[in-house]
Image (cartoon, rainbow, N blue to C red; front, side, top):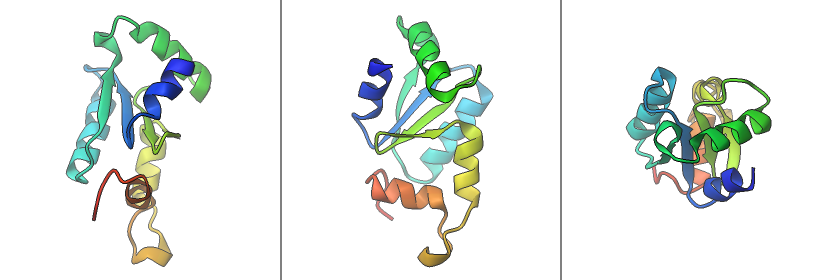
Amino acid sequence: MDRVMGLAGQNALVIFSNSSCCMCHSIKRLFSELGAHATVYELDQDSRGKETEKALVRLLGRSSPLPAVFIGGKLVGTSNEVMSLHLKADPTRASKSHLIMLLKEARAIWL
């Protein structure tokens, strides 16, 4: 768990992923299209990937924890939570999505 939180806190946008996961690919592409540079940890290509995935299972409380997204060192969640934030407009911010606002606050994008 300490390793996950340590890695998550090192950059504005961190994604724990699996290179063959279609939802992981979709989330990485979404952030790329938003202009955010993500630090991506491909757990299937990491010697400590299984250990990291087990920590994410405990942290998220679900058996399928990928992709796991952290913005500003804080856990956002998996693809469901990310997409919900992206589709939810912030009425006080000229209809920008909550996801974009989080990315701006973490300095992951400069729109």
